[in-house]
Each structure stands twice: as C-alpha cells, then as structure tokens.
Amino acid sequence: MTSEENNYSPEFKKKVARKALEQSKQNLETLSEQYDVPVSIILMWATELEKGGEQIFETAEEDIEKEKKETENVDLSISDEEVASAVDHGVMFDNLNYKRLVFWSVLGVILVIVFVQALFEMFQYNERALQDRVSAESGEYYQATQLNKKAEERITTFGVVNLEEGTYRMPVDSVINDMAADGNN
Image (cartoon, rainbow, N blue to C red; front, top):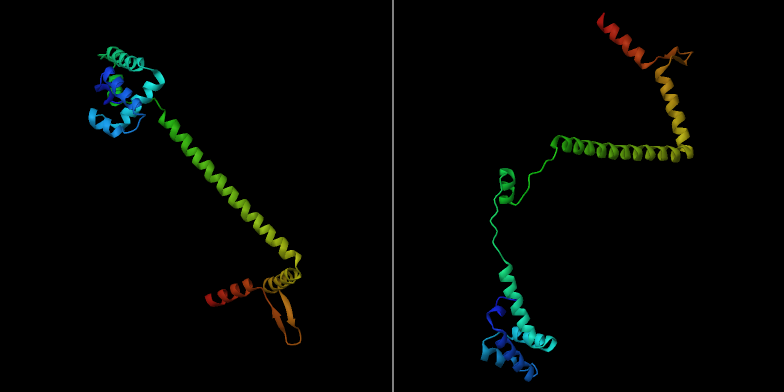
C-alpha cells in the first residue's frame, strides 16, 4: 500500500469504492475531484471491494497496525571493536592470504602466456611445414634447391675453373683470411 492510502479510513475507502462501482467505474474524474483522491487509487479500491468484499479494508488496516506494533528499535552494543567498525561501515574484515593470492594470480598469468606462446609456435611450425611440403611437390623447388647447393659448394670449396688458363676457385673465407694476412704484413 502507498502512503497516500494510509491517510484514509476504511469507511471512507468503502464509501468511495461503492460510489465508483455504482457508476460502473465511469466518470471517475468527478469522484476524484469530489473526494480529492487520485483516480488510480479509486480504481484500486473499487477492484479490492469487488474481489474481497467490505472486510478487505478493515483487514488491511489491521495489518498496518500490526506492523507498527511489531516495529521496534533495538539498541545493540558490540564489544569487539573490529566487528563494531565493520558494522558501522557495512563491511566485514577479510582474512585473505594476499601472498597466496598474488602467487596463484602470477602463476596463472604466466601459464596463460606460456600456453599462448606454445600455440603461436605450433602455428608457425605447421605453417612452415605446409609451405615446405607444397614447395617440395613442385619441380621449381627442386631446381632452386639444386642451384643453391651448387652455389654454396662453389663459394666454400677449392676447385679448378679453367685448367688451360690456370683459373682456380678458393673458398671465400680463405680469400678473406689471406687478404687480411697480407694487409698486416
């Protein structure tokens, strides 16, 4: 019930509800102005009267009186200062082990990072393997691999380029070392 309803007596409510029902809930604006009660409250009273009869207003009034009697103020004294402070502030002291909480939080974050990194590495590995497999299946890959092997062999081994002209090949590292040694002399 609203606080506005509590201002009216049960007899007044019955009287207004009966008049509303007599008028078949029509022209409630006139009733509202005549008794200075909002139309919504008149409709509610009329509905209650139809459903519950005349005693409904009296039982509602009795319920309000019971609630007023049951409401008591309790004076509470607490000897524990920590609990008293918690009650004043509306919170309770927590007994969390912050070291353990931080440890498990950090461990959890590290495990998530390791897991994500492992997934990323697996993705890259599978991607490289797929590229190698696709490339190996094509003839161009084989030719390029053979050319790379020959070029690597030419720059890392000794050999004869043209015997008649006296042209020979030397590993690049040996040539660089010889030039460095000649530069120091």
